[in-house]
Image (cartoon, rainbow, N blue to C red; front, side, top):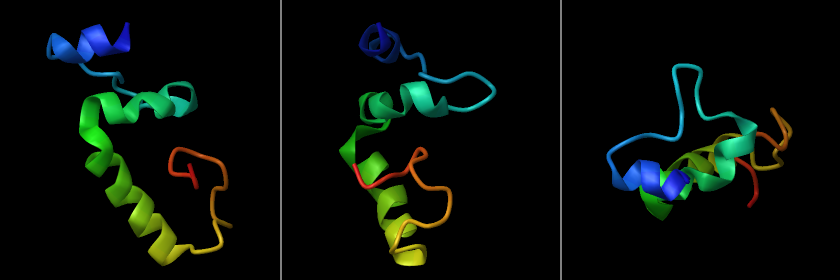
Length: 60
């Protein structure tokens, strides 16, 4: 269903953000590069993933 929404110009999220349940579908909307950039920033600032562990930007 998410792929259809994105193909029709829609988005995965509403006004409250993507949420944990839909995080795995971020690449549908933003592409792999759009997912990798925040992950690389997270790794640079928090290489041990201690801040907000297991949330939207995780190790994969």
